[in-house]
Image 1: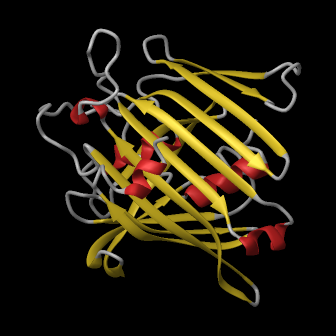
Image 2: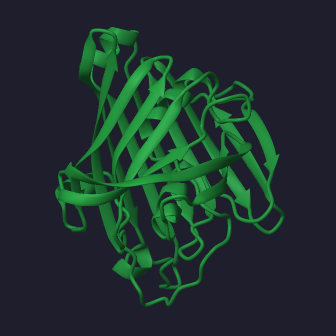
Length: 289
């Protein structure tokens, strides 16, 4: 089962869906990665098609936090769970609603292993006009199984949809794959593959590092690596023809600064507008409530 059109569009807007090898890398527990203990990335998506050129259609925010490093979220025993919490919030803008006759908001929240970044749980709330869906995927890394359940909050008596899948080794979802890739060494000409699960299905996503180029970004002029991920096609997460490209800074931070998606809908350009590593940032705190 492929992603539904709306879910496929979210995948396009999320954009930062990439891949790397499926092996984890151990690290010293006292070495902080760029997104630890907290990080928030704010993006703006623009749409182009025919005479329409770079019209704002959506905003989204990615955030990462590791509570054990913030001394938060202690359980009854006083311990702080050592896991990485990842969230994404995507909201359509006015022009998108006029163009497609639809307003949407989608929120994702995942928990992942703090070292391997393999996903433990993945929750999604999808609002499209009056329609709403909520889903949760639970991953059993020892047995190599995933169970995905989708419910309609507006129809509590309706039977939920359930999809089960299997995988070998470590598996990632859309969010955890972002951060896993940011921990990996990347060089021009390198080919990678990551096992990604979406809506209970499991995909092997090939990735290629194409070139290195200097870009003008909100962070200033930075050296960046261009990566292409095979998301489209008969065996991909998305039906139809299309191309997916993403730029990561070529430094220890591996910040995703720009994404371009060419699809039958048109072209989406997604650019980083803000980066914050301040846990007291009001905008960051509002997304954790």
